[in-house]
Amino acid sequence: MTIEATAPPVPDFPMRRGCPFDPPPQYGPMREDGPAFRVRLPDTTIAWVVPRYDDVRRLLVDPRISSDRTRPGYPFLTEDSRYLSKVRVFVGMDPPEHGPHRRMFIPGFTARRIKALRPAIEENVTQRLAELTAGPRPADLVTALALPVPTLAIAQLLGVPDEDYTRFAALTGGLMTENPPRELFDELLAFVRALVSAKCAEPGEDMLGRIAAEQVATGAMSVHELVVMALLLLFAGYETTANMIALGTLTLLQHPEQLAELRADPSLMPAAVDEMLRYLSIAELATCRTAVADIDLGEGVVIRAGEGVIPLGASANRDPAAFERPDEFDIHRTERHHLAFGYGPHQCIGANLARLELEIVFTALIRDFPGLRLAVPFGELRFKRDANLFGVHELPVTW
Picture 1 (tube, rainbow, N blue to C red):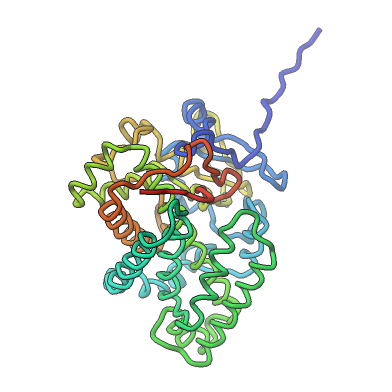
Picture 2: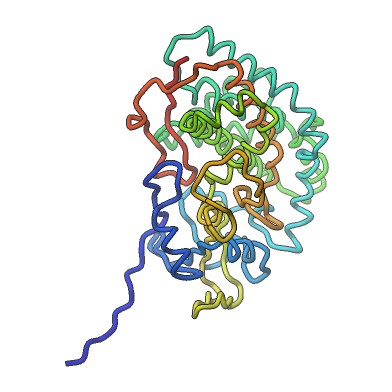
């Protein structure tokens, strides 16, 4: 009797976390077993995931993989990502087209521009914490602090008028709730369309106004392209930071000795923020790609042209070949080469803004609330286990 070898089953992807502070448990064995593995995506297509730090970093600068979402084989993880792929914007372009389009947005994220935003962010944080102090206990830190801070920052960056901010905050906050209705996204889309149309009619000094004057008015970019770009900047600019504020606070509460060190020495905060970014890696699925040529990763693994590729940033950030004691949270860690913002030409354009917001928030929060603690047992917290950006739905706290 002949026994035929059978191929190992292809696991479903995305994989989900067990412990909310750690990547999915499958990532560790994957790093040990090989450079890449086939997985089945929600739409049943097959793609490759790459778990090791060196391979992830190398692929993110490899010209043989493409960010172009219109290419056959691109690994879509949600229907919303398919929608946003209908218009080509710089995050979905390859060199040499990518560079000039990315540079359109660089002035909004220069060190000078980010520094200019600091007073407004600090004032907003001070106001939110004052309201938190005066309000009832327990309080939900997500709605009281984590959401409002990045929402105001991205609103100022995009040039949302003051009189429209309340509506803008309600729409963006609503989309962060569990299972938001599709109509809410449609309302936000209409809001952004109206905002872009206003910028095109009367450009200002903000990011959208400048691009409307320089690109839309000259025909280099369509109004619809600017709308989609504004949506991408919006989602990247507030949702990731909001999740990091909530989950980062929870991380500090779970490490009281390091929290006490930070409270005693605020100069440790920049290093602590980078460690939170590495340790939590909440946006690991933002680096989907398509191979445009065959790529030999070694150990008998060849990714063929036309196949989807997902470099796993969260796995890379826990790779013992790149970080000592990678599964430990350590605010004294000196390695700062994490991939929480990606790597290479598509590295997150708003990394410095996110770092600034996180440093301001955590410094003020742990200073002003020395008795901050969870108001419910840890086991009752509801985590975003089915979301592509990991976080916590609510964070009830008291002090």
